[in-house]
Image (cartoon, rainbow, N blue to C red):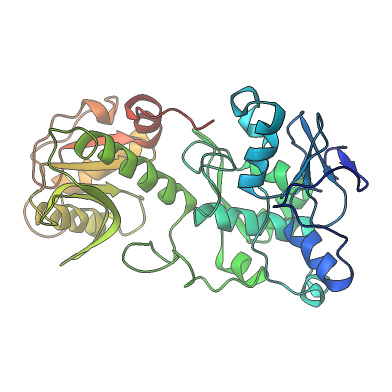
Amino acid sequence: MGVPVGRTASGSADPAAAEGPIEGSVAGLAAATATIPHTERFPDCLSYIDEPPYPLVCDTCETRYAATPEGMRRAIACHHSLDAVDRAAIPICSLDLQLTSGERAASPYSDAQLRLLAAVYMAHQQRFDHQLEYDIVWDSMTNLEAYVGIDTDEVQELLDDGLLRVDCRRPHKLYTVTPDGRDAIGVGHREGIAYGDGTGDLSESSLHVAMVAVGARLLAEEFVDPDDQPGTRVERYYGVDDGRLDAAVLDPDDAVVAALEAERINNDRREAIPADFDKMAACDPEAAWWLVKTRGDGHQVLRALNDPPDGESRVSRTYSENMAPREYRLETPGLTAVYTFEYARDTLLDSEQPR
């Protein structure tokens, strides 16, 4: 599978591109972790050498470039412009798939399925170049399916077998790799940014990662970027006395200026939502924003805060379920605004979708 742009070795090489053929087990590993020979999308102005390490080739001058994000940028800019290339046609360049050839052969799943699991996990961990390859805030994971060269039946098998889960289809499709899926690709989920303060939760979904990312960008635009605002930086998953804030704006003295909660409506919502409110209120921020998946989720947040199982009401009123969360008028230490993910991304966020 893949776009028909592979070619046999010829042409001049950029110094950053690897030279010479790769043989044996190393070639098998390169083929398993590379996406270039499998992608169904590729810039029209480029081709690639159809053997590991699959260097990119400028079709105008035949110069080769490494199959990396920087190599892709240089290859396109060689005789063309990034702005003239459809960003969705620029594939992810490689995968961190640490299975041996024997483990891949013994797996009940195809290489394409293993590639997709690795790609979704890396997207969840935000390990792709978000300006060029994949941005979880804007990009559908159907793009990842095209980049790894997998057919719909194989995707469905991963869903049916519980290795992959659909988080949402709007504003774009997001998957999360389940614990069984992580086992299938040999991932220790305490690696990288997968766990702890400044990182995230073991069970965090890709949707939650995307909501936190949108919220952090909004906080930066509102409280850090303007010269007249007190914030100096935004921290994600910021540890406080009562737990962690999904995102926080800090001033020069590390006091919390603004806080964000990306709320997932779970079975424990009646207890969890008031606890999240109290955690933010204890920081006494200027702004306490909540991001939710849907309008209905926004109303569930208000109901849980208005009628908690313990203690006093955190908010004095609720609103009609026909009202959009952005229209709520609440000024409390733990909640000053509620937005849906889609509204926050498409309407509030000043930065445009990356090129």
